[in-house]
Amino acid sequence: MYLSRPELIKPEITGIAEYVPGRSIEEIARKYDLDPASIIKLGSNENVLGPSPKAVETMIACAEKVNIYPSADASELVDAISVYTGFPAENICAAGPGMDGLLDNLMRLLISPGDEIIIPVPTFSYYEVAARANGALPVHVDLGEGLELDADAVIKAESARTKVIFLCSPNNPTGKQVTEEDLRRILEHTRGLVFVDEAYVEFADRNFAHFVNEYDNIIVGRTLSKAFGLAGMRLGYGIMPAWLKQQYMKIATPFNISVPSIVAGVAALSDNDYLQESILCAREGRDFLKEHIPFRVYGSQANFVLVDVAPLASGDVAEALLKKGLIIRDCRSFKGAGASLIRVTVGTTDQNKKVVEAFEEVSALI
Image (cartoon, rainbow, N blue to C red; front, side, top):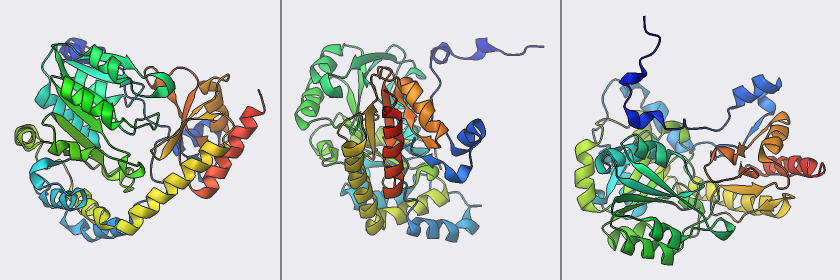
């Protein structure tokens, strides 16, 4: 009897590193013998205010309808996104699970074996997973000084086989945005498509969705996991040229967004009071953390900050914080991040104060 049949797995998969998620409260409680109620989870960039109350109400109300398939293209959600973004439905694709589903579908649509993708690093690792699973060859470009995007390096990395360039703005884990000048240069130079990941854009000072009206080779990915507090519902969407949506819908999985997720998304998109509260919480909190954490903290346009704990090692600091019941993200799993970076989600006022106190205790050991 065979214990495994690795020869059945397509060769593109064997070299992919498994995605590393943030640590869970249950995991840390077991490992360090802590009371789960005492643990502060600030490692996955979730909305610490919880979901929109309107979204919760609509999910409860639709529970008796989950025996019926949702609309195949989540048209109700697309219409709500259209109102929120100002783009017509012909430019919008709703996707599940989360923006990851959008990425998977786009890679299935765009990538043939041997195509190249360009990824400035460090950044969100799932770009590479989705692309390599479809036979793409990743080309990594290091961020420049101060962890800013090096547009010249991105342009230089392009070849005749480049199919997609991934730009995360604000970038995860740095929190920095692409400049308009750099984005235009890349769009006008590349032969391929540019995917701009705007998962954290509600917390930022600018967005680039309007570029879809100017360029035919840009896709803007968004999510309802962060500012809208619906990470558990796994809702994403893309804003793209109409020609690309027509092709995308040919391969999009039907019924890929559940009934509860659709109604929750529609409700959350209409709850502007909740959205503004979430944005204010993140912006005030990240300013507080940048000012008071006793290490170098990079400026951020997201709902997290990046902390450089050098001369200490991020693994040692992360372990010390976990023992105190504070879950943050050791960035060693991000390609190109080095060994001294830690990402901290912005919490509530009380949580942020505890974060600062914990870092102060660690810094006292230097």
